[in-house]
Image (cartoon, rainbow, N blue to C red; front, side):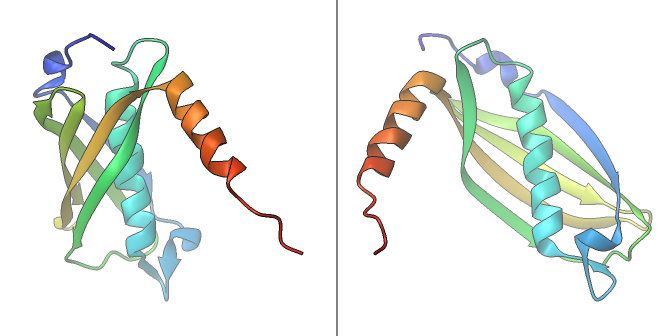
Length: 132
């Protein structure tokens, strides 16, 4: 994985979602659903820029969910690459609904070799003991 990922700096993407009842708790957008949308937006931003054989994994997510959003509203998430440190990508996140800003955050993603990731996962799962 000798490639430089500096060309990602400044790239951005926006995703929208209408808040359905499945994404709410007591009729309000849940933080879990908002975080998922923010992660999906980050992944969509990075994934389309990567070459075959590599992927990105989330190593850190920070979400400040500041305002409520009711079911039926549209939420828009913008993700922008703010920093690249070798294979570590830092993505700024902003979420707005039809009234204004509802959240912001930061996602740190690590670009990794898919084959090595699969090997590591298999090695870790081999350590699992069956429940008797």
